[in-house]
Image 1 (cartoon, rainbow, N blue to C red):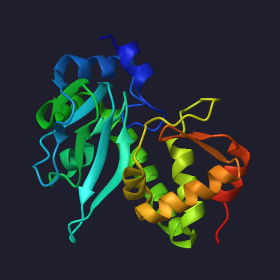
Image 2: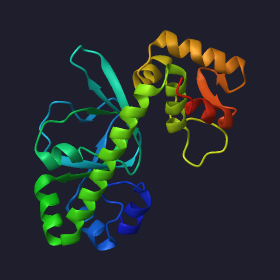
Image 3: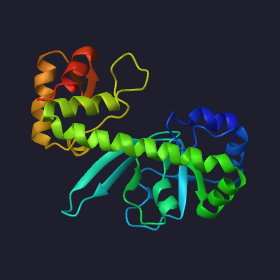
Amino acid sequence: MKAEQLSALLPEHSIFASCSEEELAAIILHGVYQTYKKGRDIVAQGDEGTSLFIMLTGTARISMVASNGREIILDYAEPGSVIGEIALLDGGERTASVTTLEEVTGLRLSRESFEGIVAQYHGMALRILRELARRLRQANATIESDRAYATGPRLARFLQRLTLSGGTDGRLRLDLSQGELGMFAGMSREQINRQLGAWSDSGIIALEGGRIRIMDSALLAEIAETAE
């Protein structure tokens, strides 16, 4: 893989998005290519964070098990996602598991290699800190806003997040069961079923063979911004 190819994969707010081609080339040089079959953990909650993983192909589910034993889906990882950077940076345990939904390939970078690259390219550390600070600010804003949103607007917001980036046909990035969608949105299966049924009747979404398709994205956006 070339540096420009990796750069094209990285999303706007990746910790490596602002890296130069020289810095990305160093990451590629020191990274180890790995392949994971469907259903395997790329990282596991509770494990020591000795490396990070840059996804090149495939999709994966990011989840954690709460103290009450309930599984919570936090997000989904796609090509360009960087996995495990927090535990690598602070030396703590993995706070979540990342499980493949299909075959995944990527680059694994050890802490030793990462620290060596950061030491070599002095501006890199500051750029990473700025991105982490932006994420913390965004996380705080999300927590506060979610407290104010009822289940309908909350589900609408999650559907917006799952809509294909740049897509125009309303398809979601992933085909999720109602149970998985509930774990992602923090709602019960019954709440999900009731809300999706109402939106389907209103023409906001279409349920096609168990798949969700957004039919009226403007109205869904209005619902997403309704606090009550």
